[in-house]
Picture 1 (spheres, rainbow, N blue to C red):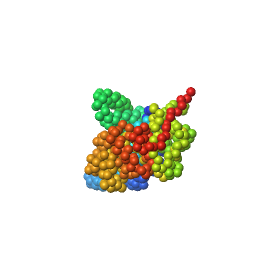
Picture 2 (picture 1 turned 90 degrees about the vertical axis):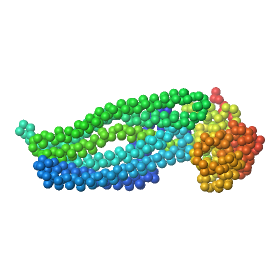
Picture 3 (picture 1 turned 90 degrees about the horizontal axis):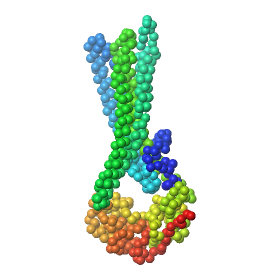
Picture 4 (picture 1 turned 180 degrees about the horizontal axis):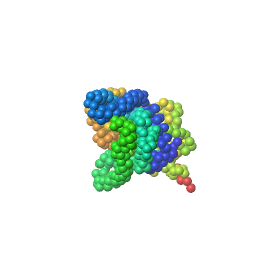
Length: 592
């Protein structure tokens, strides 16, 4: 599958629309696959089993508490003080046990949610940073532009809400199963007298609770059906706002110099407006849903008494029996109305599930076959050579073909181990695409690149990446700094002209802001002196630097006598000092 062929999942500029391309069943399957592959799986299963045991014990204790209602209220009705005190003692025992179970369940709830978040977050990050997927997605789909929302906030919400909703559903189901029998049995004692005739309705209270909860659920579904879509839209807009703020923060110097503060302020305010507009629609939907959830909640205070009152006034049950029936009705209704109470959270959970699973599906879909005739094929070959065969790079792919691109004039070029090679080209050619194609990041085009088998190729981009951390870590990134001595690091820094940094190896800083362009290039070359990779590909690293810096870095290249150097660019200094073999890029002929 080519990067540009990701349309099956993500070919849209609207994140929510892209999400809708996955059915709910497919989303659940992706989530299940993620869970099964998680290193936290066994721990989560262990917590789930413990939770099930605690919930069962809690349900049993709740049934005992419900049975306690009848003798307690009957003692009150009879004004029987000894019986009243005895039932208070029974209550203390039952309530104390239930309190202990509640505390244990709370801890298990938190640990389950924590383990689920750990497993999901690690899985999504691993999928994102596997085999160049992150870059490929960033250039092929809007899903890859600001993935931090999905990797952090959406993953957190999905894990925590999955644990909360699953535990609530299981608990409500167990309570329902426990109290339906109790309520059915109590209903058998309800005898109604109408016009001198007596009759009983089997399971009278059960049917009443079922009808009441069904009415609440259907009305909630009708009123709140737009919540899932609105939540997904809100998450997308929030991600856009955070990205805009982060981008402005990272480019404050350029914005200030251009006197563009007012323009940036206007752009950010426009993004804030889109977030607020979505939240307003969401607030209105939640407000409308509250009419249903709160209304049925308040009615539930008196509905059990109203339903059971005919039997009480007919004298077929005692006051204690009435309170026991009302309490059992409330338990059954509460279990049945779980969906009503959690409809908003379920919609929020569906939105988070949609965004995380679509993102994961987009990443895994990048692993398709790239060996078709419209893709550059990357293979491995002999360890002592790198071959480029009939390479044509499409710079601007379209649905009907290639609008612009270039090719290697030397159709079958072979670079041997130890060679010095410069690849330049016609004006107007985006040579960076060749750099990315050699690294497997750009596949649009035709031809084959055969890399040396078993050899790690070190790519040096024009703008090096300097992660936040200690200077010693940056020097040899991504290799572990413990593999290199301080003496070697100081010598490398001195060789490239950064002796002033020798005493700052353990300093942690934002080095991308502390060092200028020349110093960042020198730091990258110091890393090459330390690691001495056998194959190095440079992307115009000498262009735009001061002459003194270029002279030092070219000297470093000469020092790397055991390395194969491939320079993509037009550096006259590299050409004069190393007398490289020249390869040429030329534009593809324009279609008639």
